[in-house]
Amino acid sequence: MAKDETRCFPIGSNILKENMYVDDALVSCDSVDAAVQARRDLIEILRSAGMQLDKWAANCPDILSGNHCASQEDRAFDKDLIVPTLGLRWTPATDEFSYTVPELSTITTVTKRAILSEVARIYDPTGWLAPVTVRAKMLLQHLWLQGHDWDQPTDHTTTELWLDFRRKLAALQTCRIPRWLGVNSKSSRMLHGFSDASERAYATAIYLVSQDASHLLTAKSKVAPIRSVSVPRLELCGATLLARLMQKVLQDINLTIASIHCWTDSQIVLAWLRAPPCTWKVFVANRVSEIHSLLPNAAWSHVASKHNPADVASRGCSPDQLQGNELWWRGPPWLLSSTSFATIEEPVISTQLERRIDRACFVSTEDDTIENILTRFSSLNRLYRVVTYCPRWKNCLASTKAQYTSTAITAKEITAARMNITRAVQVYHFREEIHRIYKGDDHYKSARLRRHHPYLDEEDLLRVGGRLTHSLLPYSERHPIVIPKTSHLARLLVLHAHEVTLHGGPQLVQSFLRRQWWILQAGSLIRQVIHSCVTCTRYQGRRLEQFMAPLP
Ligand SMILES: [Zn+2]
Image 1 (cartoon, protein in one colour):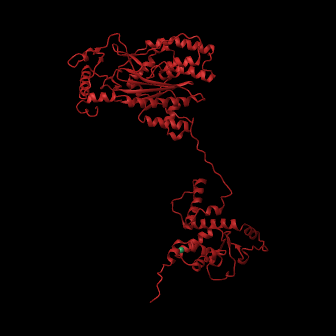
Image 2 (cartoon, rainbow, N blue to C red):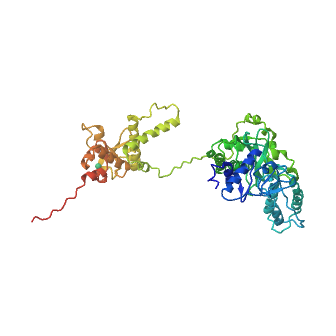
Image 3 (cartoon, helix red, strand yellow):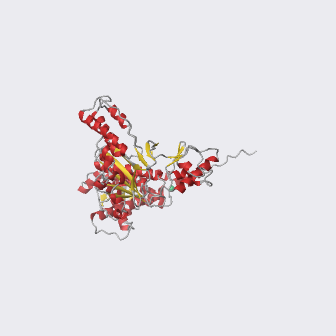
């Protein structure tokens, strides 16, 4: 119905959508005229569905008088009338909320059960009594920590504390909280949230501030967890509680808010909030990131503890002290002078507390042999290029002198890389042979190399001796470098030769390789590589031919 009539009765439709509590509509308007209009809209919109509204009540008799006043039961509120509204009491004559404190029976023994039962009767949906209720919560937590049984009488100190608290509870009835927040639809408004933590509890309080008044909107308190948590962490929990409550207020409040300010008396929390969440350990990072995502536009600043109203709620106060606590009900006096806090220069603060430490761990294992490294490559060129960049990195680390003018690598660097790889492979596979040759042990004959008369050249590479020393062939062809068949380098060399010779057959690949390399028992390796070459397999494939039937 509210949806259907939005065009004809926008005010009435809005009230039906947002201000109905079961079968009661509770509406507040800026002026008498607006209230009369709202009443007229509401009557019309419900009449269209055949519903008649009655039992009107208002704190201004003018709203009920006039043409639309139809029912005998309509009345203005009496001076002394008190209306129970959602757990609170509302006095229409003065437009104030107050609390009912339930009648407390005389108790002979104080037990955990009795305390819990009486604490549960303090109904405080808005959190205005947070400083009082937090005292009761702390007392209960203390009893749990002591391991008290439900019906076990409490010790003398606790009994005295509770009886004193209980006696003073009646003072809460004198608390008067104005319903009207002192703002109309035109005034500029700000939300100020405060958070604080003590060792035993953390709390938050939110104020709506207009040009000439500030009012406590809502508050919340929680006791600190039983496991010990550091005070900075509790302060951060308080800030998170503030962000969550502020988000709730923003969703529910039907007003345009000019700006949001959040205050905490912990410099560490501010430092945590000013760095990216990933800087901190998990506990802090999670909460910092939640606060930022809940309140992306809020300004966080530092407030002195004596000006922090949330401090009242985190420490708690006795019921008789609450009514007179101006800091709690109005916030610090400087909230009203909107310029004084905006110009405060915040000192730049930093902290190392809870910073995430990145640990780099280097492990060297026996598996890091040259062969294991080589198997990570499937292309010879790529291997050469990667190995060429390694000394560059090393030189850059070692000194600032080695400056490379270009990122392109040179032929000289590639040659050096090839020599280094070859030497490493030879040392890995022919350690014993190289050692003997180095020592000049002519009598040592290795079974693998005996036929090739190996020797070490001036670059300490193992080459084939052979009988071509006096030939006119180039040096590398007369004395090719020895590479074992089992090395991954041999496979890469064969693969490369096969590609360079445009997928040449075994003989072509063999003769191409011999110009520089002598791979021991290369034949089988070459055949194996060519056999597994996808391109060759595809082009050498034979088509299926249809089997012809015999001629008639
Ligand atoms: Zn091929």
